[in-house]
Each structure stands twice: as C-alpha cells, then as structure tokens.
Length: 335
Image 1 (cartoon, rainbow, N blue to C red):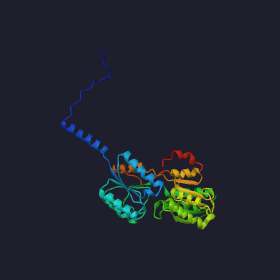
Image 2: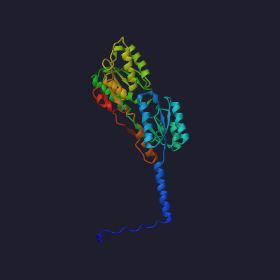
Image 3: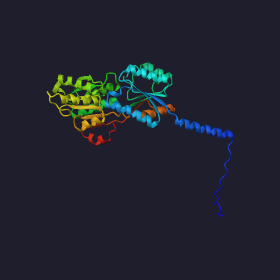
Image 4: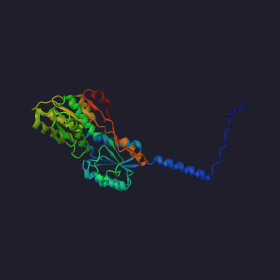
C-alpha cells in the first residue's frame, strides 16, 4: 500500500450533532432562506405618467425593476393633481407598505403626510422630484434620500450652450413646466444664472406649457403672434414642449420660419423622439435628464429596509446632446 506523506491525514469520522444543534442549524437555514425569499411591498406615488415621454419611460423603469428585484410594486398615479397624490401616499401608510417612493407633483405641502409616514416607521425615498419642507421639519429626517438629476445644472447647461451658439446675443422665449414643480423651478433658475452673465441675452416672454406638447404648441403660437421674427431661440423645459414648439413654427406659414434654423430650440430630457428631431436639425440641443431611475431607487429602498443609510442627495449623470453628436447616440437610446 502506498504510504501517506507526512502531511496526509485520514479523514475524521464526522462527529454526531446533538439534537439541539441540529434543530438550531435547521432553524438558521430556514430563517436565511425566508429572508432571501421575502418580497417587500413598496408603494410608488407617481406624479403623472401621461404628462410626457420622459415620465412614461420613468414609470416603466420602475415596473421592470420591480419584476427583476422580486418586489411587489404598489403603483398609484396622481394624474398631475397634488391633493390626489397626498391621499395616495396616505393610503400607502394605511396599507402598511414596507417603504414609499415619492415623485412629487409639486414641491410644497408634503410635511403632514411625511410626518405620518415617519410615525408609522415607513421610510420614504424621493425620486426625481425634490420637496420644500417647513423650516421646523427640515431636520426631522422625513425622507431618507433624494435620487435624480441636477435640475439647476440642466438649466445652466441649456443656457451655456445657447450663449455659446449665439455669441451671447439672443432674444429668448421660455416655455416652463408647472410653476410649483421642482424641475421647472430649478431649470428656470439655472438658465437665468447664465443669462445674468450675458447682457445681450434676454428672456422676452415666459409662460408654462405644463410639460405637454399640445399646451406648449398653443403657447408658442401666441409667442409667434406677439414677437414674430424678434424671437432668436426657445428654451423648453422638457422635450415634449419642444415638440410642440416645432409644430407651432412649422404650421405658421405666414412667418415662414424654420425650426432649428431661424429659431433655435433647446429642450431638456433627451427622449428618443427628441434625438430624431436633433438628427433632422429641427431641434438644436437637448440636455439629458435620465428617466431610468427605477432600479437604483428600488435598490436603495431595499438597502434602507436592511438598515443601510445614504447621503441626502444622489445625482444621476446627464449629458448635453446637439445636432453634432445625436446621430451617433440615437441607436443606443433606451427611452
């Protein structure tokens, strides 16, 4: 028989576990398996899926991520009505969901319902939309974190591109989102940050288009009637409103202006239709605002439920696209 090397040892006979140890091990394995299989119910309060292509892609990203992560997604859409959305969040609290994701329709009026969520020990993660809390509530930890794009940067990026393109001389009409919506507020501030640096750049008219192409089209028709060829450029706070601007200019046969040539158009979002219009040179620049937040937001919510903490603000990475780089990026667009 071959001899074992000095380090070779015959295997030991397995020691017999006592009954108590076996039961403890079985219980531990069962608990671990249960924890891994546990499916959280997370309530998602969406502002208004129908408002834009961006919001539709945003909603779909949450539904896809919930399936992938094994989460039960309790979805409610406020249809752009803040009072409805507040009631929907209260319903989530009453249903005792594990966590709540809120994409707020407007920035104000959330203190009471968030205090209720805090009392119920239901963590709230803000997605895309920021909030303005009362001073006495700002340090109470009413939400865990906010995840989204830097809206003020988006406004600055739009203004910077336009300033460079026009050598700092341009009469601009602005089509905003809803007056109390965080993206509209911050994009407007960022745009004006840049305008203040260029005396030759002036916002000659500004009006909400409520994120929708048809309403923005009506606003642009009025701007064309009042200002006509005095308009150098349009800053639309989202892509869908930029689409309405293109339609309004093309339908005004009396002026005979061409979108993207006679009137420059800058939008924010970067949806696929916007890229197509960039390639057609009917829109000149789009500042990206990534809507695919579902997976990262839901993962953060799961981690929070597991006891992890996060910084109060988490920004997505966004870029600026123009007629020069849109064609190369278009095939890879996911929304």
